[in-house]
Image 1: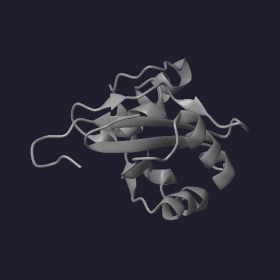
Image 2: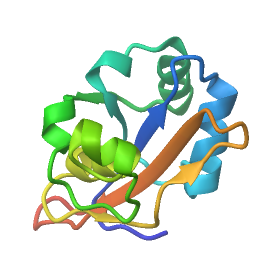
Image 3: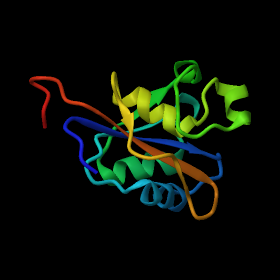
Image 4: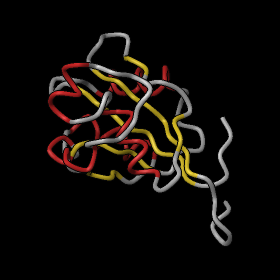
Length: 132
């Protein structure tokens, strides 16, 4: 995975998801190399498992509202998620919104081995003065 600027992982997960669930989803999505932040829905951003994983990786958590995801075009299309959030995949939409303008998904969301969490990674291109 190569990215010139910002890479963000978006997580969708059940309240009972463990740090192992989140790690598994992240590994399936491509791993933590090059990430700059973790994104989650605001009401899940303080989940102990998410906070522990973000702290372990030394990354900030971006808490986003469900409303900010509406209308975001994603690879994955879940009818249930479209009806509830207005986007096809919470994890993919979180990653795209958090990565910023012109962000693109590196791949469709990936699921943890236990089915408790999904993760997607998005990358935004660098602008002049922002290259890392």
